[in-house]
Length: 102
Image (cartoon, rainbow, N blue to C red; front, side):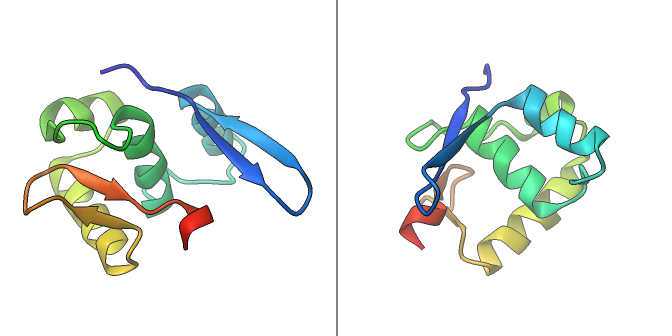
């Protein structure tokens, strides 16, 4: 599945950024984000599996983004605990809770 850019709006300032794979990689190179951070996993999931997408194929997602399956499982569990990611009926498909709706 190809990444779809995500637009993040900052209502207070009227600014917005377009988040895509290249931008995430730039944040990692600039040491503002680590690939092991759960927020990196959150953005990677939201890019590859936009809301309404059918299930997550863990092996291909891990290959594409450079995770091991246990690392992905830990990050997903942390995101679910923070209530920013919810499983759809115990399947590997997710509802994303975007900052605007928190």
